[in-house]
Image (cartoon, rainbow over all chains, first blue to last red; front, side, top):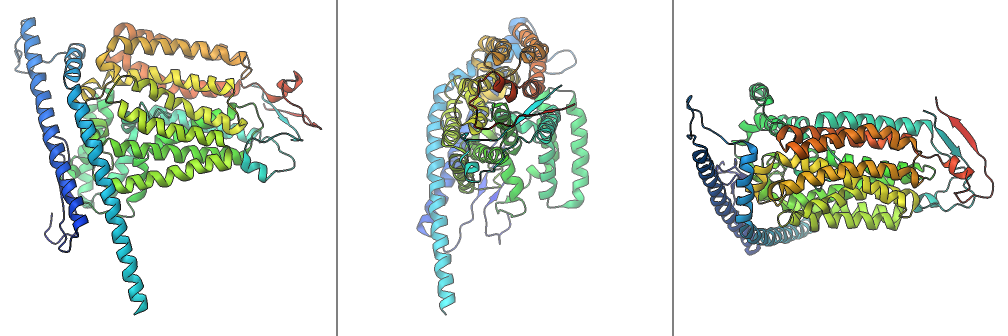
Length: 147
Length: 440
């Protein structure tokens, strides 16, 4: 994002986590409240990034292992004669999906709780910041009118 | 067909729509031919919309993620609107065209999600300023509120209104539709607000406004509040409190029950089916002011319909669900998934047969609807037996035209108010002027 910009910038989805990173603009006269908001957002972003990157990597890895083990059981290789990667059909993969979901169930529950808490907190802070800014703007206008 | 409409003086009849009561018109007359035409047009366009866009009624609940599938046209237009470099636009539409052709052969669900991806892939790789542009706002809010799904929710509510055995009140109808639409917008926005990281990880939903940072969560919540509160108020004060209560309950059910439940238990599908069933009930209560058996039947039909529709669709999305952590029957209990879909296809036949028993439609309804109900049951059986992608797709696509057609047939077989009067079923007013209008 350009150096002179005064707003946040959001980027393309991350390769591992599929989340879009945000670069936060730090205004020179940032108030304590605004700083709390920015830090909350940064923290949430980092935490989400960590979770999903690790989770997706685990998914991909376990999927590969599953395909490999199944193919081996069937007596096939990972790549067939023409060099293309051998895949299992949807019904065979269904076992893996079911397994993966149940294995990660607790992890997801924990993440959900965290995410909802963070989301509410960030939105509430945003509301507070917006309110303060609006009041400040109104006060400034009143002062201008009086002058 | 023959449509007999009954015009009469209201006499001392209670009008369940409070707002209209205030502006009581001396002769309340059914808007007959025009109304039917309007409704027919609405269903016809709904049919077309469905076929090309895979939209579906308020199971914004169940089908909410999938709804994005049909956002193609709208999304593409919005994409081109916000593209900062117009000359490159040509290149993008070319690549998206090529992508289209390439991906056309692959599975249906990915097929539609690739088109927006193809058109937006270049855009996606850029960094964007997180500043809200006012001319983007309508498009963003439309996507936030899942406007097409909302439109279908409104149409199912209208179907409920139309099927109610009372003379048609236009203002009441409009107020009820508007209120339902606003409530649906609010619910959809809150749903997207809750699901940002999960939506980013699923192919279908990764282009939503909150995921792409086009709007802040605060604004999303404010928008939801500014739709939901007036919507429910409109329903409670302008229509009747029962409809308002149902609307509020539905919002709660969708945002606070269904959305979190999606990640905790497969029971979410049943809750979502209820969410989808409530709008027609709301339409009915808006018209009559009470929860009759007819309302529950209509709700029941929509409830049963959700299952073949959603279960068939979710069959092709198992990978995304598994990775995203969504507890869906298609992943955890595949056998149950197919059984339930079939069960509810058959239930539709049963419910259609109950309709004339409850005096909502004539006996022609179960007869005329039997072919389409049998067909969807057949596809449901194929899905149950084969459990593969092609049968799930067939069932899903069938469900898209099945519902509008069923509702349309139901409406055309609606038991006329005149017939009921003859039987002395309805409370008569003081003076009655009965006029029949036979439509060609």
